[in-house]
Length: 276
Image 1: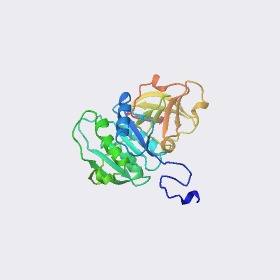
Image 2 (image 1 turned 90 degrees about the vertical axis):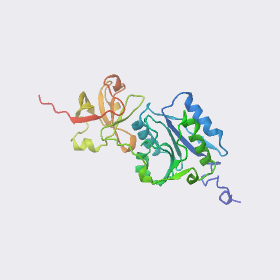
Image 3 (image 1 turned 60 degrees about the vertical axis):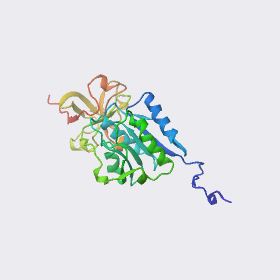
Image 4 (image 1 turned 45 degrees about the horizontal axis):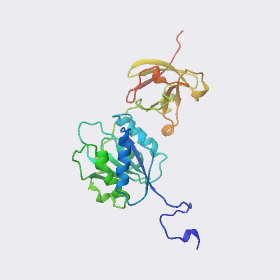
């Protein structure tokens, strides 16, 4: 009998053994709470799952969460489960579970707006309100893990909540120029694509006036490869995230040690013109 005649849906034609479902946790709970969440999911499982290393979100930042979710979705395998534990909102948005049209991602968490960018890219095939919106301390450990483990164990999404119109999903408004993320090197990822450089007629080697929330901050060099520049030079460059979002940085340094900038701030760009 050839390999391809084996009647076992757990095997693939690539020859791997067991195809585990994968779960990606994104949370601003970054201490022991991460372990509590993971263990709570494992507790109710009958099927195997691979929980990826947790993605740390800047505390209370829905913008950072929405961006990092959208970022990792680019390379995530189809049918990955995205579980969000971030809720700085005073109220209690509905607890939801849904599924995207493209790639079949399952997403779980509060309807705080963080899933809007994901759904904008991949569409929404199903959306349900989880039938438990009562407040309990640390619902990220006490409520969602049970829902997730039921889904992994084979319970259909439609049996885990009440169907709602996908158009009711909340969406964050993230304006052009918004700071989305600052990595551990101090690179500032901004909601601009390369088109803004073309619109401002900024070419490789030009200098750019950079403002933060309307106030001039620094003069930076637009460089196609920032690491080719001298140490300490402030640069604007086209980065690797989401097909080339712009990044603001300091060559082999941390620009955040030089200027006060944080996620959610607005970055303005203007071509520098030497009038002397």
